Image (cartoon, rainbow, N blue to C red):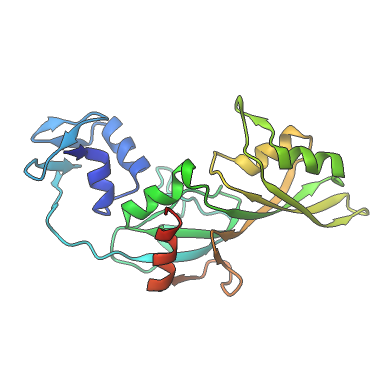
Length: 239
Protein backbone atom coordinates (compact mmCIF):
# COMPACT_ATOMS: atom_id res chain seq x y z
CA UNK A 1 0.00 0.00 0.00
CA UNK A 2 1.30 3.45 -0.95
CA UNK A 3 -0.08 6.95 -0.62
CA UNK A 4 -2.20 7.80 -3.63
CA UNK A 5 -0.31 11.01 -4.41
CA UNK A 6 2.98 9.09 -4.54
CA UNK A 7 1.53 6.44 -6.85
CA UNK A 8 0.14 9.04 -9.26
CA UNK A 9 3.37 11.08 -9.26
CA UNK A 10 5.56 8.02 -9.82
CA UNK A 11 3.46 7.12 -12.85
CA UNK A 12 4.41 10.47 -14.34
CA UNK A 13 0.99 12.11 -14.27
CA UNK A 14 2.24 15.25 -12.45
CA UNK A 15 4.52 16.30 -9.64
CA UNK A 16 3.47 15.25 -6.15
CA UNK A 17 2.69 18.86 -5.25
CA UNK A 18 0.36 19.18 -8.23
CA UNK A 19 -1.26 15.82 -7.47
CA UNK A 20 -1.92 16.95 -3.90
CA UNK A 21 -3.59 20.06 -5.30
CA UNK A 22 -5.82 17.90 -7.51
CA UNK A 23 -6.79 15.84 -4.47
CA UNK A 24 -7.65 18.94 -2.46
CA UNK A 25 -9.76 20.19 -5.38
CA UNK A 26 -11.74 16.94 -5.32
CA UNK A 27 -10.58 15.78 -8.75
CA UNK A 28 -9.12 12.44 -7.64
CA UNK A 29 -11.26 9.39 -6.86
CA UNK A 30 -10.34 5.95 -5.52
CA UNK A 31 -12.85 3.21 -6.31
CA UNK A 32 -15.45 5.91 -7.06
CA UNK A 33 -14.85 7.57 -3.67
CA UNK A 34 -13.37 11.07 -3.44
CA UNK A 35 -9.74 10.82 -2.32
CA UNK A 36 -8.22 12.74 0.57
CA UNK A 37 -4.58 13.40 1.35
CA UNK A 38 -3.09 10.37 3.08
CA UNK A 39 -5.27 7.77 1.36
CA UNK A 40 -3.35 4.63 0.45
CA UNK A 41 -3.95 2.41 -2.55
CA UNK A 42 -3.02 -1.08 -3.69
CA UNK A 43 -2.43 -2.34 -7.22
CA UNK A 44 -6.08 -3.43 -7.40
CA UNK A 45 -7.58 -0.02 -6.58
CA UNK A 46 -9.03 2.08 -9.39
CA UNK A 47 -7.82 5.69 -9.47
CA UNK A 48 -9.65 8.34 -11.46
CA UNK A 49 -8.34 11.83 -12.20
CA UNK A 50 -10.68 14.37 -13.75
CA UNK A 51 -13.00 11.50 -14.64
CA UNK A 52 -10.34 9.42 -16.42
CA UNK A 53 -9.09 6.09 -15.08
CA UNK A 54 -5.35 6.06 -14.43
CA UNK A 55 -3.64 3.09 -16.05
CA UNK A 56 -1.23 1.86 -13.39
CA UNK A 57 0.03 -1.02 -15.53
CA UNK A 58 1.07 1.03 -18.54
CA UNK A 59 4.81 1.53 -18.86
CA UNK A 60 5.59 5.22 -18.77
CA UNK A 61 8.84 5.97 -20.55
CA UNK A 62 10.73 8.54 -18.56
CA UNK A 63 11.96 11.72 -20.22
CA UNK A 64 14.25 14.38 -18.79
CA UNK A 65 14.86 17.91 -20.06
CA UNK A 66 17.05 20.82 -19.02
CA UNK A 67 15.53 24.18 -19.96
CA UNK A 68 17.05 27.65 -19.90
CA UNK A 69 13.88 29.27 -18.63
CA UNK A 70 13.17 32.76 -20.05
CA UNK A 71 11.48 35.62 -18.22
CA UNK A 72 7.71 35.89 -18.36
CA UNK A 73 7.00 32.16 -18.22
CA UNK A 74 5.42 30.34 -15.27
CA UNK A 75 6.97 27.18 -13.81
CA UNK A 76 3.88 24.99 -13.86
CA UNK A 77 2.35 22.46 -16.24
CA UNK A 78 -0.86 24.50 -16.58
CA UNK A 79 -1.79 28.06 -15.69
CA UNK A 80 -5.29 29.14 -14.73
CA UNK A 81 -4.59 32.65 -16.02
CA UNK A 82 -3.66 31.37 -19.46
CA UNK A 83 -0.02 32.46 -19.25
CA UNK A 84 2.69 30.58 -21.11
CA UNK A 85 4.21 27.77 -19.06
CA UNK A 86 7.61 26.09 -19.16
CA UNK A 87 5.89 22.95 -20.47
CA UNK A 88 4.61 24.94 -23.48
CA UNK A 89 8.23 25.55 -24.50
CA UNK A 90 9.10 21.87 -24.87
CA UNK A 91 8.05 19.70 -27.80
CA UNK A 92 7.07 16.56 -25.93
CA UNK A 93 3.87 14.52 -26.21
CA UNK A 94 4.28 12.90 -22.80
CA UNK A 95 2.91 14.71 -19.77
CA UNK A 96 5.86 16.46 -18.09
CA UNK A 97 6.22 18.97 -15.28
CA UNK A 98 8.97 21.10 -13.72
CA UNK A 99 11.15 19.92 -10.84
CA UNK A 100 10.58 22.73 -8.38
CA UNK A 101 9.90 26.26 -9.56
CA UNK A 102 11.50 29.46 -10.72
CA UNK A 103 9.64 32.76 -10.34
CA UNK A 104 7.85 34.32 -13.30
CA UNK A 105 10.67 36.86 -13.76
CA UNK A 106 13.55 34.50 -12.87
CA UNK A 107 15.56 32.84 -15.62
CA UNK A 108 17.93 29.91 -15.90
CA UNK A 109 18.33 26.20 -15.27
CA UNK A 110 15.12 24.23 -14.77
CA UNK A 111 14.55 20.48 -15.00
CA UNK A 112 11.36 19.00 -16.44
CA UNK A 113 10.43 15.33 -16.39
CA UNK A 114 7.69 12.76 -15.92
CA UNK A 115 9.74 10.84 -13.35
CA UNK A 116 7.96 11.31 -10.05
CA UNK A 117 10.51 9.31 -8.10
CA UNK A 118 13.42 11.47 -9.21
CA UNK A 119 11.40 14.64 -8.69
CA UNK A 120 10.64 13.70 -5.09
CA UNK A 121 14.29 12.90 -4.49
CA UNK A 122 15.58 16.19 -5.88
CA UNK A 123 13.11 18.46 -4.06
CA UNK A 124 13.32 16.71 -0.69
CA UNK A 125 14.99 19.09 1.82
CA UNK A 126 17.21 16.35 3.24
CA UNK A 127 19.04 15.89 -0.08
CA UNK A 128 20.33 19.50 -0.12
CA UNK A 129 20.72 19.69 -3.87
CA UNK A 130 23.01 22.57 -4.84
CA UNK A 131 21.45 25.49 -6.70
CA UNK A 132 23.61 28.38 -7.93
CA UNK A 133 22.07 31.79 -8.60
CA UNK A 134 23.39 35.07 -9.94
CA UNK A 135 21.57 38.07 -8.52
CA UNK A 136 21.80 41.66 -9.65
CA UNK A 137 20.87 43.73 -6.62
CA UNK A 138 20.34 47.41 -5.92
CA UNK A 139 23.20 48.74 -3.80
CA UNK A 140 26.83 47.90 -3.15
CA UNK A 141 26.86 44.91 -0.84
CA UNK A 142 29.48 44.90 1.93
CA UNK A 143 31.41 42.13 3.65
CA UNK A 144 29.25 42.24 6.76
CA UNK A 145 26.07 41.58 4.78
CA UNK A 146 27.77 38.83 2.79
CA UNK A 147 28.64 37.06 6.05
CA UNK A 148 25.07 37.45 7.27
CA UNK A 149 23.82 35.73 4.12
CA UNK A 150 26.42 32.97 4.49
CA UNK A 151 25.33 32.18 8.03
CA UNK A 152 21.61 32.29 7.28
CA UNK A 153 18.82 34.84 7.68
CA UNK A 154 15.33 34.55 9.10
CA UNK A 155 12.63 34.36 6.44
CA UNK A 156 9.06 33.25 7.06
CA UNK A 157 9.99 32.64 10.72
CA UNK A 158 12.64 30.09 9.80
CA UNK A 159 16.37 30.59 9.38
CA UNK A 160 17.92 29.66 6.05
CA UNK A 161 20.69 27.09 5.97
CA UNK A 162 24.32 28.22 5.58
CA UNK A 163 25.17 28.98 1.97
CA UNK A 164 28.01 30.21 -0.23
CA UNK A 165 28.12 33.85 -1.30
CA UNK A 166 30.54 35.53 -3.69
CA UNK A 167 30.62 39.12 -4.88
CA UNK A 168 31.24 38.94 -8.62
CA UNK A 169 31.32 42.67 -9.41
CA UNK A 170 29.81 46.02 -8.53
CA UNK A 171 28.90 49.21 -10.37
CA UNK A 172 29.24 52.37 -8.30
CA UNK A 173 27.78 54.54 -11.04
CA UNK A 174 24.53 52.58 -11.18
CA UNK A 175 24.72 51.49 -7.54
CA UNK A 176 24.34 47.78 -8.25
CA UNK A 177 26.14 44.54 -7.36
CA UNK A 178 26.33 41.12 -8.96
CA UNK A 179 26.30 38.39 -6.33
CA UNK A 180 26.61 34.64 -6.80
CA UNK A 181 24.64 32.69 -4.22
CA UNK A 182 24.74 28.92 -3.75
CA UNK A 183 21.90 27.51 -1.68
CA UNK A 184 20.89 23.97 -0.72
CA UNK A 185 17.19 24.53 -0.10
CA UNK A 186 14.21 25.26 -2.31
CA UNK A 187 11.97 27.55 -0.30
CA UNK A 188 9.46 29.87 -1.94
CA UNK A 189 11.10 33.04 -3.34
CA UNK A 190 14.07 32.21 -1.11
CA UNK A 191 16.87 34.18 -2.80
CA UNK A 192 14.80 37.34 -3.18
CA UNK A 193 13.65 37.14 0.43
CA UNK A 194 17.18 36.58 1.70
CA UNK A 195 18.43 39.77 0.07
CA UNK A 196 15.30 41.63 1.12
CA UNK A 197 15.95 40.75 4.77
CA UNK A 198 19.31 42.51 4.68
CA UNK A 199 18.01 45.54 2.79
CA UNK A 200 18.69 44.82 -0.89
CA UNK A 201 16.19 44.60 -3.75
CA UNK A 202 16.85 41.97 -6.41
CA UNK A 203 16.68 43.58 -9.83
CA UNK A 204 17.44 40.47 -11.85
CA UNK A 205 17.83 36.81 -10.94
CA UNK A 206 19.02 33.79 -12.88
CA UNK A 207 19.78 30.23 -11.84
CA UNK A 208 23.13 29.32 -13.30
CA UNK A 209 23.17 25.71 -12.19
CA UNK A 210 20.95 23.02 -10.74
CA UNK A 211 23.11 20.33 -9.12
CA UNK A 212 25.83 19.75 -11.78
CA UNK A 213 23.66 20.92 -14.71
CA UNK A 214 24.22 24.37 -16.18
CA UNK A 215 22.73 26.23 -19.13
CA UNK A 216 25.92 27.76 -20.55
CA UNK A 217 25.28 26.24 -23.98
CA UNK A 218 21.55 26.96 -24.06
CA UNK A 219 20.08 30.25 -25.20
CA UNK A 220 17.06 31.64 -23.37
CA UNK A 221 14.10 29.36 -24.10
CA UNK A 222 16.26 26.52 -25.45
CA UNK A 223 16.32 23.05 -23.93
CA UNK A 224 17.98 19.67 -24.32
CA UNK A 225 17.40 16.10 -23.22
CA UNK A 226 19.53 14.70 -20.44
CA UNK A 227 21.65 11.69 -21.30
CA UNK A 228 21.51 8.43 -19.26
CA UNK A 229 24.73 9.23 -17.39
CA UNK A 230 23.30 12.56 -16.24
CA UNK A 231 20.07 10.93 -15.07
CA UNK A 232 22.04 8.30 -13.14
CA UNK A 233 24.15 11.01 -11.56
CA UNK A 234 21.01 12.86 -10.44
CA UNK A 235 19.73 9.67 -8.81
CA UNK A 236 23.08 9.23 -7.07
CA UNK A 237 22.57 12.57 -5.34
CA UNK A 238 20.18 10.74 -3.04
CA UNK A 239 22.76 8.15 -1.92
